[in-house]
Image 1 (tube, each protein chain N blue to C red):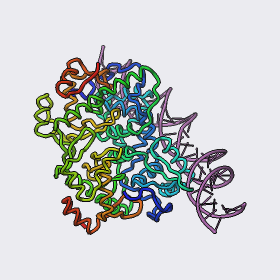
Image 2: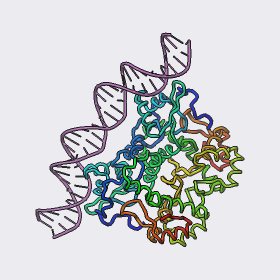
Image 3: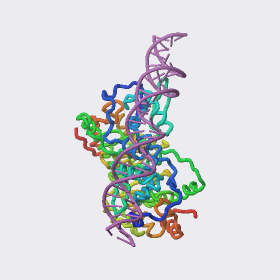
Image 4: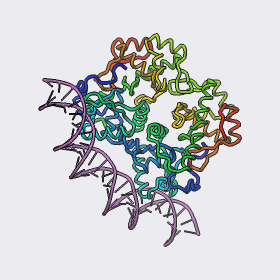
Length: 251
Length: 251
DNA sequence: CGGTCGCTTCGGTGCCGGCCGAAACGTGCC
DNA sequence: GGCACGTTTCGGCCGGCACCGAAGCGACCG
């Protein structure tokens, strides 16, 4: 880049029209939806990947069911969440992994919230070890797995994100990861996702979700609390993470 | 993932506190800043990577200098832009590539703005061919270069994003790209960035910026209008893009 | 050293939208 | 069928903030 600082202040009159609208997408509309504390809290709760009922989201956001319903309707109209009616409940979930990506990207540039309680600082510390990021693994464990796969030459750059090398596929299948099913899904197969706490990439996409599911099913990791993103490494998980991925987890 | 739909509606009482605040970052605060149309327009204008004066941004956003000044102060306090005073002008620019990433991610989930004029539809069509994405290349040309580098085995997955293989470095240096300078910069060296129009990755980071700068300096590409993101492929650029990267550009 | 220009600060106005209680709607349970 | 429950819709209140004009402050210019 030659000259980032504009030399001429007034500049050549870029365009006669006052606002060329730059692109095609109404960025402000989506950001406005996320920019309301109650809605942001709901979306963060949905980052766990599960679908939650309207009432549950109202309780989490600390607003009345009426208010939550309005918020959720806005989020639905804005394409950020989808809804499915089941009985007299209505379950909401994030509309797409892209929405989760926006929230992750926002978290990277958002001001840190002042830590109010010891309880909260402990929770943050716990989250930095292992947690889910939408539907895949994040935290030190997530980054460690990404590092291990990288060092092992399991991943290569492809035209549509990461691809799995033959050696990598053999390795993951050996661990019980259903690579074929992950590849069959319509969503992005594998891609890096910048970890908020570690500031280094971990593995996202269908493959990342498959690995996360395998480690949960296999009992390597368990949720600290139902519906929360925080994960705890079990004793067997600690052994196997060290043995298979070379990831050391302090107790 | 085993059971995405919560089986028990009320769920186990996840936490006694009404709002565990989930993480650490105040996502809503940053989103609220972007969620105002005038501010969003300013930020999009800054996506071109150049620093712009306050008055220029006011004109682009279609608000008075007084209003723009308030907006810019908020963006500065929120850490989304930085300012540098030069004489009686004050130049603003995006605070970090992460901010650009947020805007890109938002564009992926934002509702398409209704196309009002033929002029605008032509502009969008032109942008889809070649444009800058903050400080690197995007559009079909940007994605094409990513594909070419991938096919050539120039990129490999590293623990901190993409790395350049020996062959890749030799190749890019041969094209006049200052790889050493790019590697020396403190920011992320190379990483994929999902293209908004193509929905496939192009190359971001210091290396992406270096390639973009080289192609602009070498006269392969020129800005369609000063301070705008749209790029035009020159005649020599068309020949060289085809020869070096195998990227075909229709006139 | 006034004059002009660019930017910011200050007051004041108006509107958008977040909030709740009450009521309506639909569903499941007894 | 009636009741309880979860959710949505409606009405009304109220706070925050986007907006502008005018004034204040520095910086360059003649």
